Amino acid sequence: MRALLLAATASLLSPGWDTGADHRERCGRLAASVTIRTGAELTPGDELRGGRIVACVERPELATLLVAVESARAAGYVRPIVVHTELRWGRRSPLLVAYHRSTGTLLAGGATRALDETVWLHELAHKAMDGTRPAGALAARLVDAVEEGAADYFAAALSGRPSVGSLSGGERRDLVSPAAPGASEWAALAVPGAFSSHRFGAILAAQLLDAEPRPGELLRDLIQSLGDDEPWPAASSPRAVVDELVRRSPLRSRRALEAALLGWLPRELARP
Ligand SMILES: [Zn+2]
Image (cartoon, rainbow, N blue to C red; front, side, top):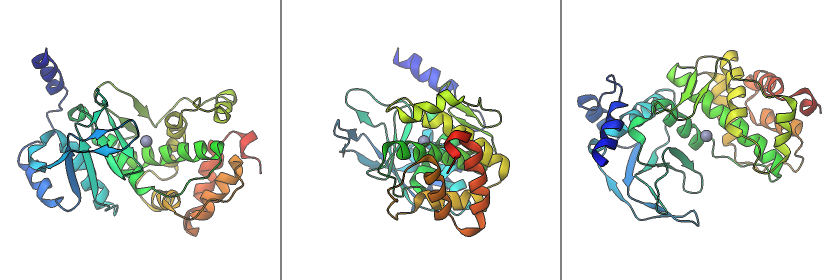
């Protein structure tokens, strides 16, 4: 059974993914930017315990992670990152990857071989957007959706591909023509646990990609706005959230950012 599983995973590898000389060279170039740890455990209390550092060259299955880090560095996003691979999560291993905000690290399960670089780029963007968040639940959910949209936009703009997700048959988000939610779906914003920040974020990402397809000022300034560590004002209506995100952006991108955010919200929520 184990051999079968390994064979199935290996068949997902694209022939273009280099795991030889290029991988070794990237490991050398990125030695100061990427630390790989393996075997840590994520406790039910959300703490990371144990694990050990492993050599990058021994981890050819993380080749697409290194491609993503190199793209992010080339675009000027140079934060060093710790990646926990083969993370143990209770008795099971999470299948995909996630950004762990409290430790600022990337968490990955055992299926990393099947992931393309857009998945890693999305998570690296979360690290770059580690700013403060509003205290109100509705406002926090809305900012989460903006953050997911910004992470998808980051991944699409840097990879040059308008589609973000796993090659393994997992979720893949199309940023060219995502299905627009109806006003009743937006009502889920007011209900704890009912709102999909990824789905709503992908619709925003599509609009941002349309406004500026290449990585440029709009992307940089949106990421900076979400990485700002100033405390949030108490007002938390959807329009107040948009106004605050725009205020946090450098002047040059405010108009484009406001147009994208107000074009994304339904009219009832965009009213001041
Ligand atoms: Zn995300």
